[in-house]
Length: 566
Image (cartoon, rainbow, N blue to C red; front, side, top):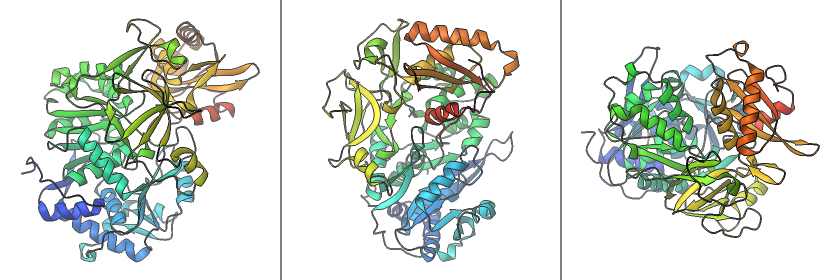
C-alpha cells in the first residue's frame, strides 16, 4: 500500500494545509517514521504516524499553542529528533505562529549558540517533550510538551494569515548566527524545487534522513518536501548515525527508492567506518539519490563511497552534488540522479586569479572539484563581488540567486538584510563560484579567502593538502585561516589528531615539517603556525562544519597554546 504512487496534490499555501489534504486523500498511508536506537546493539525501534494521525496531532498541538501566544509570536522548538519535533513544527505553522527550529539544552558545543538565538528570537513559547520539560522550563515561562497534549484538544483551524513561517538561524560558520525569515511561500516553493530536481515529483521516493531537523537541509528534505508530495519520511537521530553509520545505510536499503542527503564528511565516514561484516546482506541498488550538500563537494569522496559500496549494488549515478544555503531556504542547484558525476580539474594558479582554466587531473597543482548541477527552478548568476557586474562562463565571482525560495531577510537586522538580500531580489550568497559547461562549481567562501602577497588561497584547498600529508591528521577536522601580521596576512593551520592516536605517540615536529613542506610545494604558501590539537578541540557549527571563524578567535585568544606545536 505504501509503495503506491501518491496522487498529485493541489497547490496549497502552507505545509499544514498539505498535511490536512493528505489526511483526507490518503489517511492510512504512512507519513513519518522515527527509528530509535535505544541501545548500542539496537537494530532500531520504529514509531510511525499516518497522515490521519499526523493531522490530528498537528491540530491538537496547534490549538494548545494558540492558547499560549498571539499570531506572529515566535515559538522555539527545543525537541529532540523525532515525531514530536515534526508535530511541533507543523503545529506552530498551523497556529499562525513563527517557528524557531532549535534543539534541547545540552547539545555538546552548542550551549552558547542556543542562548544567543533565544535572546535574539525572544520566543513567547517553547515546545519540547516531557523528557526535557524540567531543563527547558528554566529558559521560558511558557512551555508546551507535545506528548502531553491529548488528541481531544484537536480542532479545525483557519489557514494562517502571517507571511513568515519560521526563522532559520544560520549555522554560524562565518559570523554570529542570524535568523533568516522564511515565508510559507518560500518553504513550499523550495520543497517543490527539490522534488523536481531529484525526480521525486514524477516518481515516488522514500525520504530517509539523519540530518538534524533544526538544520535547513534536514528540515526541507525530511519534513517540507515529503509533506508537499505526500511521501514517507523515515528519520533517525544524528547521534545514532555517528555512533554507527551502518544504521543509515540499513534504512536506505530497507525502503524502496530511497532519497537521502548528508554533508561531505558523512560519506567519507561511512567508507572508512562501515565494516565488511556490516555490509553483509546490505543492498543499496534501490537508492535513487544521495545528495552531497557540502561546499565545495569533493569528487574523491564520492569515489571512495562508491568504491566502498559498489559491491552492495550502489549505482554510481545516485551521487548528486548540490549547493544551497539558509538564505535561499536551502536548495539552489543540484546534479540530477541518473547522470554521471561531473568533475573538473582546474589550474590552481589561475583559480587564485579568478579564472577557471582546465588542468590535467594528475597535475599536482590541479584543484579537483565536482559540478553542483543546474539551478533548481531559480536564477543563478556569477558576479564581480565589488562592482556587481555579471561575469562570463569560466570567471570566478560571487554566486547570486533569485527565486521564490529566497527568504525575506534577517530577523531584526535591517542593515544586514539590505546588504545581503538587496532591493532587486538578488541574494548575495557570500559564496564564490563559476559556471563551466552549464554546471555550477562552488570554489569557497568569500569571507574565508586567505590573501597572501596579493594572491588568493582557498582554505579548504590548503586543508585538503594538510590532511593528506600525514595519517595522524584527522580528516575534515582542521581549519586554515589568515591572521594579520607585520608584513601582511599570515596563514595558520589548526588540526585535530586522530582519535586512535595520542599526541604522545606522534612525532609532532616531523609532522609539522611535512605539513609545511607540502603546503609550500603545492601552494607556494609559508605556514606561520601549525598546531596539532586533541580530537574535539576544533569548533564546529550546529550543522557539523568546522567553524574557521571561531577557530581563528580561539587561536588569537591563545586557547591552543598548550595543546599543539608550531
